[in-house]
Amino acid sequence: MNGMLEGKAVAVTGAGRGLGEAFATHAAQAGALVVVNDIEEGLAKQVADTINTYGGSAVVSAGDIADPDQAAAIVECCVQEFGRIDGLVNNAGLNYDTPSWRDEPDRIRELISVNVLGSMYTGTTALRAMAEAGRGGSIVNISSAASFGQHNLATYAASKGALASLTYSWALDCEEIGVRVNAVCPVAHTRMVWNSERALRGAPPSRTPAKIAPVVLYLLSDEADGITGQMVRCNGNQLHIIGQPYMKQPVLEREIWDSESVRRAFDGVLAAHLEPYGLEKRRPPRERELFATLESVS
Ligand SMILES: NC(=O)c1ccc[n+]([C@@H]2O[C@H](COP(=O)([O-])OP(=O)(O)OC[C@H]3O[C@@H](n4cnc5c(N)ncnc54)[C@H](O)[C@@H]3O)[C@@H](O)[C@H]2O)c1
Image (cartoon, rainbow, N blue to C red):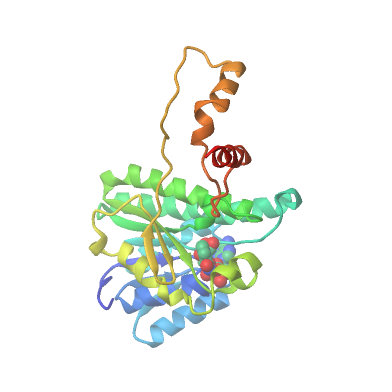
């Protein structure tokens, strides 16, 4: 990894601990000039101090990414201190578990403000700076396989699904300005995981944040030239691309769809094409009934 990001300036949000800290320190080891952001200034300073002590180059832009001015300040700090911004890791995020019927407006608003709006504020400011400089760049959004839909994590899942959609759309918009946009779906043992019983089961202590850093570094680097619009999952020993939603066949056509013809479509052709849903790939009850009937016949 040494030298992979030589001469590049990279900002990492939420880099005071956990995955963000690993992304920032590994980027610095790979030669990047790094802006360390976190809402907890003391933690961001510690990470920047460590990088500088070991011969790297880091500055702090502490602040809340959910505030558009503070989010913009992270990118501005990078351009002012290092004269450029080549990469952004949209990493800062919040999580909580709750059955959906117990979720509350204040918690929903706080999570979406950080995970979605915060990433959009930093992302769009970085894209603007990259477009103006005309040197291209790379954005890595930290999404999650929870975006498929996960039990008791609806608000978090929705926020990470929004990052997937942003990744596809920004990638489409930005190819012409030479900026690549990808997402990484990590699994790592961090504070977020300690606070989430469900996530804890999927992320044992051996899955350290450092194991995800090479994936993010690769996507930030010029080695990943030509790779954009991808959701990449890294879970323990596994590295793979996540498939994108698509329009499924068959597409039924008629002049006008009234409720009777919709009912007939679901009772008939579409019954055999229902999709398993959520991360656990649960079969819809209607499909389970259909399979039970088919098995009893055969
Ligand atoms: N740990 C996992 O297995 C896992 C899995 C999938 C996705 N993720 C995602 O990875 C990212 C990092 O998660 P982590 O596990 O390291 O969590 P973490 O809680 O250990 O660290 C998150 C950091 O973000 C900072 N932060 C929170 N709100 C902020 C804000 N408004 N502005 C700036 N900084 C803020 C926190 O202070 C903290 O230092 C998150 O987006 C998370 O959703 C993690």
